[in-house]
Length: 260
Image (tube, rainbow, N blue to C red; front, side, top):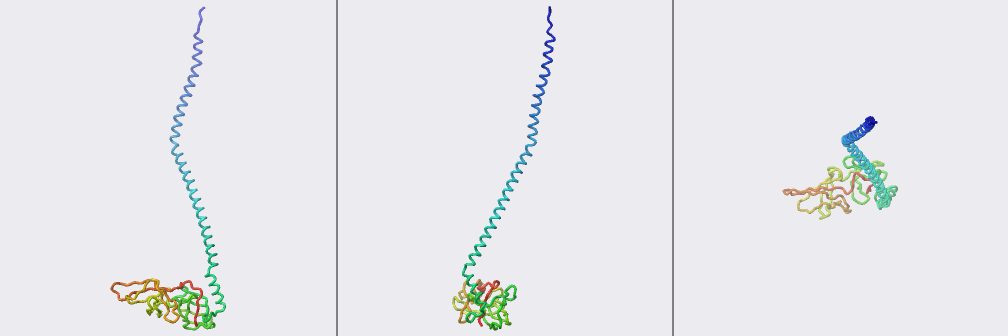
């Protein structure tokens, strides 16, 4: 009897074809997805890199500003601490003790033959290098009385007197002339007020004078009146021009002594 195998071979082909097709589809899909994946990654990679750069920059900036804020806070704290220490030192200094003594004298008004007065107004509140003090005729203040600092330097004279007040005209008032002595060589000079606590004078060019030299009052007390601040001379000039300044800061006067 003759056997027929054709149906059996046909069934094998029918089974392997779908399997082969499925394998081909899977392989093709893997290849396509791989290519697409690389393409997508290549396309998106710059954006990712930019995002990473932005995030790192933002974090760095945040850290920088946080550091700046911390340093600023620390600096402020240190300044406050320094101010506190300076205030503590000042409260224990000799100047503080001297000021307490002056206040005590001001309560008594008389210190030997001098009258202690508080300065009510001073330049620039008052014009033309004048000062108003809280002592007047009721305290024996008189016209022409000499006004000086508690430390000794002279400032000016009483120009107006009222019962409880007096006006002081400083030697540095513009145009005010004051006889004085140049301490370096005892040369008599005339100081001319230039305003703002300053003076000017002229000297022969052969008289020695230097910045920092002291200028004294031309009387027996020889108290300090001014300090040389600048010396200028031209080669053809017979005189040298000298600028001097008051030893006191006339813009911060608090107490003065008046000698009747």
